[in-house]
View 1 (cartoon, rainbow, N blue to C red):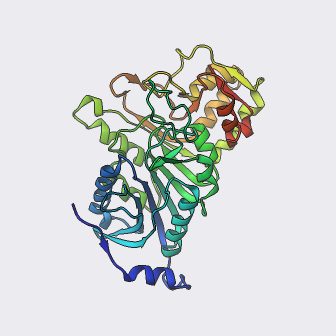
View 2: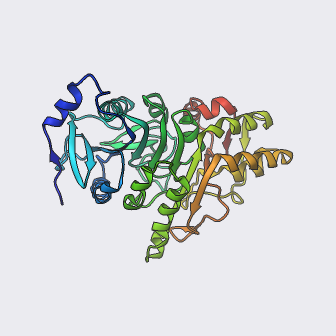
Length: 373
């Protein structure tokens, strides 16, 4: 495996100079923020190799921040630039918790200061299980001790979605989650002002994640074609020979319509707490009980929005969702037909502590309702 090349002079040039206008900004700088101090380190290295393979096809700055296990060859977190098939170390950091908003903010600042651009893209790469806070429902899934986490998992630490939203120093052209279950309305709404577009999966994702050979060049197109990015991702999994691996969902969202959706809901709901007594007819994004993420559009039509505003709801969703694609099934047993691409959390039962966390989410503040079985 190719070792990272350290160019000691680069940090001096990039971080000691005060006049960054000497070099004209690139059209786009894309940062992949990889929280891989966990069991995904091997996959992180494979993804970086894929990026190197297509680096000559891009016109812009492709940066990778990698936080790896302490016992690995990349033990100290570092910021790299991938260019012409080579990977150059820009800055090395002391041991730090990369699943924290403060570190995310610091790394992004370093990236955009060293490599200014007219537009910025961010890929958040790690484990993910939706909006839920650190340490919640240790035993929710079959008694497993693997905890729900919002995004990232660095040596047992996790990052709240609210921490991400509060620590992004610029507005991005796009944010991509290369992580499970992040296309949920709670997360998307929290980040509605952080990016023009958000791409994420409403289901679990296979460990291979994004096919970077196919998608990285698309991220540097003059006019990004989000539909093509989604199609390339899903087609990569459609072409797998093992039926179990033919499993993928991906949704591209135009964030400017999220506020319109929340206003429609606020104007048309009567109760703060909405009981969903029978979830069987609903479309779930999880294959293992107890399921907590259900299709937002399906649930709104069936349980929340009056029938006379369904046409308005449909119109908003057609604007909100740029493109959504999926395989027929997830892991051969979860049907995905007729799903719309965005999930919503349904409490398996009411729990005051968890509800207290939910109340802090912008989605709840602006719609004033929650769902419980």
